[in-house]
Amino acid sequence: MFEEYLPVLILAVVATAFAAGSLVVSSLVGPRVPNPTKLSAYECGNEPLAEIRTTRFPIRFYLVAMLFLIFDIETVFLYPWAVVFRSFGWFGLAQMGVFVAILGVAFVYEFGRGGLEWD
Amino acid sequence: MPIDFLAIAPEIALTVTALLVLAADLALRGDAKQLVNPITALGTVVALVFTVVLWGQDRVTFNGMFVVDDYAVIFKVLFLGTLLAVLGISWRFFAEGRYFQGEYYFLLITAFIGMLIMPSARDLLLLFVALETVSIPAFVMVGLRKRDLYSSEASMKFFLVGVLSVAFMLFGMSMVYGFTGTTDLAGIAAAIGAGPSPDPLLLASVLLVIVGFGFKIAAVPFHFWAPDTYAGAPMPVAAMLAVASKAAGFAGMIAVAFIAFEPLADVWAPLLGVLAILTMSIGNLIALQQRDLIRLLAYSSIAQAGYMLIPFGLAQPGNVAVNDAAVQAVLFYLIAYAVMNVGAFGVAIAVNRRTGLRSIGDYSGLGERNPLMAVAMTVFLLSLGGAPPTVGLFAKLAIIEAVTVEVTGFGLVLATFLVINSVIAFSYYLKVVRTMWMGAAPVDAPVLQPGFNLSAVVVVLMLGTVLLGILPGLVSDFSALTSVQAAP
Image 1 (tube, each protein chain N blue to C red):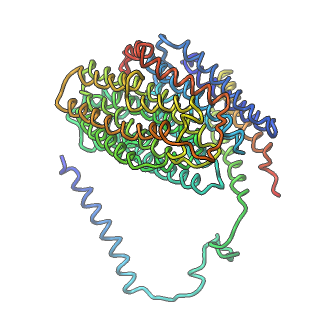
Image 2: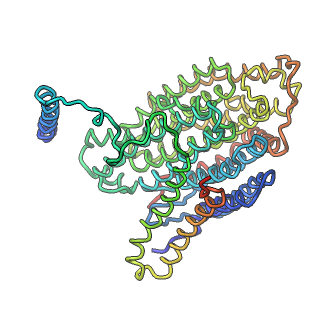
Image 3: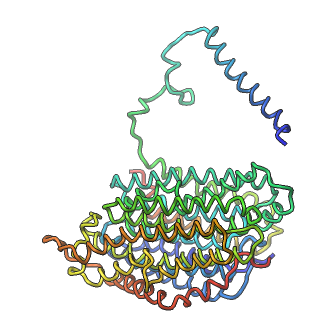
């Protein structure tokens, strides 16, 4: 039974050897040109604005992310539902209505608790 | 295929309540916010009515994923009863502690929706969704006191251990699906039963699935989160975790062990039996050292989980009589455990809510300061230990009875450990009882103001503990009829 796993074992050994070998060879023969840019944080090509470890940013970003999730999930479900909408009939419409209503409650809750006010 | 709405009526009732609670939390201001508690209680009663109506009707919906049989109904009544009790002990704790009340009750209901689904789920995916619905609100509830470092630590530990064990469980589930080609529990059992001798990797994945539920029930070696989490969490949340969440873990464990992996019982039964021995012994031995009452209750609840794991160690593949007796013993023990343990947490809240200290010394002289609470705590602790005339004795007898259905050497070893551990447990339960009745009350001891709801819950639970100790048939007449392996 275990003989069947022999190719997997060989693959694992070869993969490990290749990865380890590449690292060793590149550290031996690769050129070293250190400069400050290489050590800076990568922010999509922009100049870094501040030190990451000491920067504080508003927790409201999380609220915006939550709000985004609410509508994101809604869209993810609405698209496939819209494609097969006709075959579901009224029952499907009612079900989607319930789903959107529950998400609506979440949205109203966030709105009512002041989650959308930036100050 | 139409959906059977009556079968999911309790869950729907709780969902509607959850949405109402959110709306009420928005609408109400200041002191009026505590009205969220009776709204929640009302919704729970509605759900309870729908659940009781379902007794005796075997309903199946969602293509067999969701089954409401008598076994599931008993579990649901247990959960909803626990929810009512937790609401009773939560009211003043949250109303006077400046907590986030609306959020708390919403999260509490959400967690209980997951618990209601758990005993009905007959599909790995639904079980997973139910388990996560129980866990994720619990992570937040533990950390509700967000400026309190202990609460944050408790929440963080609970979250990390929880996510890790769920990852193990998902990995196991995916491999089980790979081996059997189905996520339906009965289908998995059929595929395993029909196949040749099981692959070692399949056995490993079965154990991985069990790890996930082992975390929920706080079995050794997945118990490290429990004491810190109970100690740091708001106390009603600790009561919920120690009772309802643990019962939900057992519901899921019974479903996977006795339905899906029943043909492999000769593999997992010895393993869970050894876990039972470790869990009750380690839980009890560490509890002996505790000076903090909540930590003592936490280790005691670990030990109790060990007792409830004993019947799992008795299971045999294909032996319906033994397996049914094992499930019934767990069910009866869970009900008894819920009654006495929520009560013990209730008294702890009455004594320590204001002072914030949880040392056992705080209970010194409780017999003079508040005889009602002292009597109640004595009853609950004696019952947890298993003294007559309380329900705890019959719960332990139910486990011994399951052992005697078909006597095996391993069963006798398990029963021996149960008896030895019960004796050890008495020493720390009685230590608290002695402090309450024989210790002198501190001069500056605060006056206890438990409030009406908490007192009512504690009295009802105390009467329940004694009543079920005299007439255990009130529960066991129902639980002894149930079987998880109902005909499909």
